Length: 155
Ligand SMILES: [Zn+2]
Image (cartoon, rainbow, N blue to C red; front, side, top):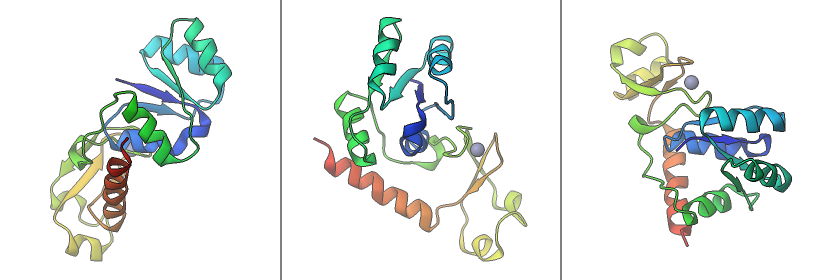
């Protein structure tokens, strides 16, 4: 299942990537969003009802996202039966660029992360597209907390 999110849904797009979903984001033009969805078989996610209706008329799958909050948005997608497996770095995509994240050895990130980080962690991941390095630090802990919150909100 692949998605394309409109410009209103940057946060949702980043979360979908973290959950491993191939999610395109950053296209402003409605026609281009529809074209891309059609060409690449993506489901459109949008806060714009007009865009959603237009896409549906063309036979393209589109979901009108009802809530403004990330909690509400994830809850809606869960209600629709979209699976959210527990956050796990190996299955995640890069929240920045949608690239695939792979685990790398500690030696590979030497000199590329702050020394304190290098000393404190043994687990490192890198985005194969943009090169961003990730490790299970405070930011990751915050995301895991959010993930738990999404699950308890589950209707
Ligand atoms: Zn990336």
